Length: 242
Image (cartoon, rainbow, N blue to C red; front, side, top):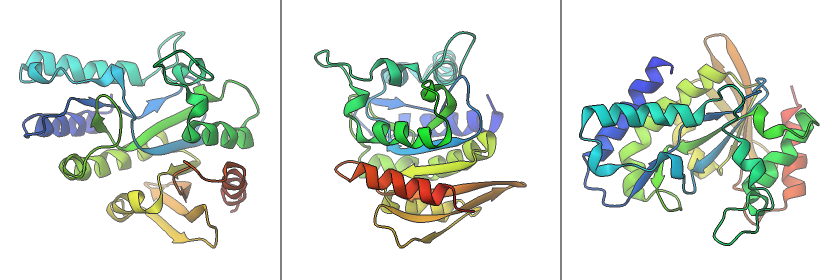
């Protein structure tokens, strides 16, 4: 793992573990598809339940177990031979089993699937993405972090997102978060510059420039309940705009 990211995650988790937060928590790092080709990094608000990252809260005070937990996060977030950590998105597509997550019912993943077809028509789209979230720590069961949990982790998460962008260098960085959620990150990462658009669904666009790397940045409203075809068309138009 890139050392700066490892250090940031360790500091953040240790800090929050010592807080008075009583909710069971989970951590989700940025996840790299096995065939990531540099085209697209998509950002959500926070993970909606993530079993592989659930904290063994009462064990993290043990240095050896803490180190093992950090290593486990890395393993489930990065591809190894014959394994893609984003295969679960494809496997859960259309899953109608009771109490199982169906990615096809997620407006977020439907938008990502349709956007990726702009870049690459191959079916194995999940393996060519970077998937990340603004906030890395969320309630273990489901849902977005509380205001308290957001406040505890926000500064760390801003630094982490900057490191992720610099590490993966995507041609396009797509926030499916809404401008209100993205705002602290846009303000905190000085290398991102965006302006409001005249669009109703993709509300800001611009670029990121870090150490010679330059990428396109799009900020869309959260997809839930929106006109998905219209959103995809606006993303396509602004993604291809020089």
